[in-house]
Image (tube, rainbow, N blue to C red; front, side):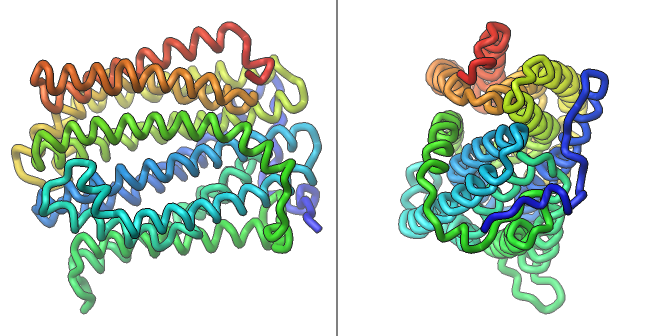
Length: 460
């Protein structure tokens, strides 16, 4: 039988904010998520950093292109993560703890089945996918090898993502943070040893970074799934529940997660296509683009943490029909996110050269990377608005609206505008980044108008 451990596992008091304590509650939930995602981003950041010091643009481009493909797959599981967190939060807020546990178990089953399918596809068609992305001949085998090694951990890595979403839905954001710290620590240590051949280990270079990442993800998955199954979290899942098919839970998960999945796939597909545009400009431009992306990705973490906190608080509040409390949480999260991203935008604008220097690549690559990073400052404030409002709508049960907004952004701006600026006007890497900034601004404006209309109170 599935049992809830809310009464006997006092990890963090379940968030039940009053109007006066909304800001504190948002930060209490968001800060561990921010740290967790900074650590998770540091996994690929450290890979790029170590490979950059090999002074091989082809290896750096291989990491960038294969990582973009892996992120497309991850986006599907991120949608399942967000959908599961929102549904668990709604059930938790309504006091339906047993129902939340059944849904959580079913979501883990789905993630395991999907992860096996994607691992098989990556192994069979890794080289073809690299070629489809426009990788040069010397980049293809390195990128395919990197992707195949990382995917070895997929059957546990992706269910662990869902496990973290389950924990967040109950208000526990600290356990995922500590587990991700373990992932990152193991990845950095193992990758450093295997990339450069330290202490008698073979110098595997790019493959060493992939093996370090896979080992880190596997260790984190054991910790995350073990916590849910052993009862060290608020919600405990019995292992036998994982072998039972719960069709009502499947329907709920698919109804909420499918539009979110379509949104993230659309977004990452657009990213892949303009990555393809960048790849057509040459390996040096591709390497610069990846360096700028790695630095810029650190800016996503505060707003992603606030978005996840907003999903949890809005989900719990709407589950209890406390709509004013939900709106207050959104307003506080939005204010904090805008402040943080505005400060980061100023840092990127003024210190772009210094930030990219740590990657130790060639001078021309670093110069282009600095230009791209400086332009990225323009997209950070609207990105904050987009992420927080998307999280709010997901918590309220509306994942269709962000999907349609993303579709409009990808078709009109991420593809058409970026192509025109990059290829048509010949702006190169600058065109990619200016088009992206305009894209995020348009999406943020649309979501703000929709949120102000109040449709979210009806769950879409």
